[in-house]
Length: 396
Image (cartoon, rainbow, N blue to C red):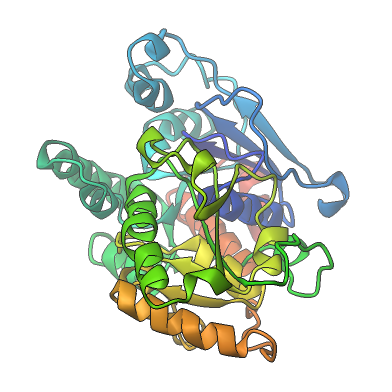
């Protein structure tokens, strides 16, 4: 079976939360199919983690291909270059793509539907996390997120199946479309990359409590988190005499605002973009997530828990998490709360034992079920070629 995964982001090499989720999902899908990731974004010399060939199942593979633009959108806007609005009508860039099932994000649905039509294949919308709410909390005006909400509802109703990132997102999708075609597919961090027993650990030094913040540093919610760290948390740590025993480290993809001047800030250990976050997470004592955007699941929280690290976070950063990971997080709402939580981490850093192990999710099974459900609906409508009938019977 062939799966075409269509996205507006270049997810490989992986260096952000969305990248890691996509990598894990597609790696799991190689259990049942040949997978090709088609993307519209092109990042020159992108750094990050690439999966080893031996991680793929025998007789199956995962590839990545860039969809070349038909118009020079990059001269106008990088965002338009990603979205490719001409592909609402023009299928010439994807009419040769072969697929039995098409996986897509909301923003790439207009591209995926051309591939689905040519191949008479179903579309599975994946990794859904209520996009219009994300845009709203990122500061976009109603002129942007209101139309996005209407389009999102349209896509969810038209898709043959939908997978959601959290129980909250799953409930939202079920309120928009048929509940039987909605599947909860939680993010399960890659055990090879984020396993707590892996030996690769960044050495920050043992002289201080090492507190880590990481993420895409050009996104609004992370920029606000950086502002909180610089303007509220660090001054409060200095005020109570805790700063001399605490090291604040920051890394991530994207370019942070120049006004922060992180490269020359003596109070922050700024590492820039790293190839893989896992060694840096394992090397720290505590991960801080002062993020206020409540939309979606914060992948970094699950990654840090998989590395058996304690987390101190704002309430919004825990939205969508299940009870088990929530029990391993200290939730605070102010700079004073962060200081008190870090005080306790200083006392416990030398005697902390494992408190959380990422449970095995039904990610592979749920993603497969979503694809099979979509294929089954096509079969029931008698729009599937004869060989597809046999394929569906075998997969079931």
